[in-house]
Image 1: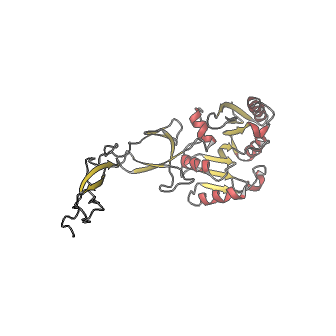
Image 2: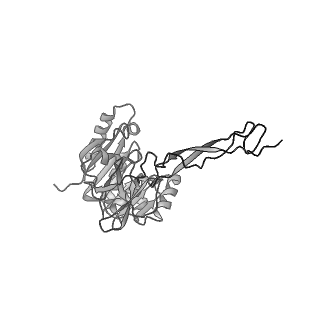
Image 3: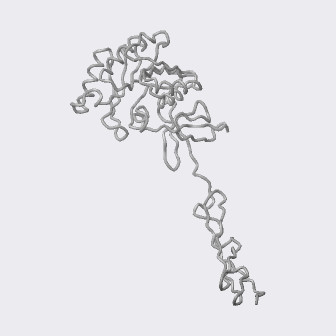
Amino acid sequence: NTSNMSGRGRGRGRGFGRGSPGGRGRGRGRGFGRGSPGGRGRGRGRGRGRGRGGGRGRGGGRGRGGGKGAAKVVVTEHRHKGVYIAKGKDDALVTLNMIPGKAVYGEKRISVDGADGEKKEYRVWNPFRSKLGAAVLAGVSDIFIAPGKKVLYLGAASGTTVSHVSDIVGPEGIVYAVEFSPRSGRDLISMSKIRTNVIPILEDARLPLRYRMLVGMVDTIFADVAQPDQARIVGINAQYFLKNDGHFVISIKANCIDSTLAAEAVFASERKKLKGMGFKPKEQITLEPYDRDHAVVIGTYRPSN
């Protein structure tokens, strides 16, 4: 005999909220039906039905987020011109993106409403991937790179830090980026196609005569070449391109200069070499915790007083 009772299901639902803005709830239900003996109805065997239960449940869909959006980010100026601090859940060092909508090395971008009502986009500057960024967060007094400045960057690599220097100097400034490695140079050239204030130079920084026709007089030399003769490399480039009373920022990796000496001894030796070439070091700062056994030395070239 067949039964007219078809194993109807009653649903119980529970809601699970995701906490997205406006939070939606999803319900899951289980149905329990009782069919007559032998009746299949919608149930299996003893009439246990598969009813979905309506899916609304008790959860209400609020979830943990309470339906609120992301925390608001406020961007303030750093004491170094052209550098900013994004204050939100986690504070971050940022630069104003010269090419909005375009990332250079997969960095996070932050859009905020400016005082004039227009949206401005900032790029997060990772100090673990940039010696200059690490120096800023370590508290260096001045990087001598600012809007409108002309900078000679030795050891540009694929352009990670160069892109932030490009943001800082802006459309009125210039970054002459020297890199010897062909592989890194390809990335540098690709980046410079959209950042018109970057001039890529694929040459050996030991031979500035090869690019003397491409580089004008500059306000600042930044060097991160990680070579034993780094001080000499900076010195010969300064002779050709750095203004008197111009400035230098050198990242020194102790192990690349002399791995047998203590880091502080290496830094002292490099400062002495720089003094012998017309540089006047004014400040030294180590890059812990971002880079081990690294220091940045900053100073003036051929000071007038």
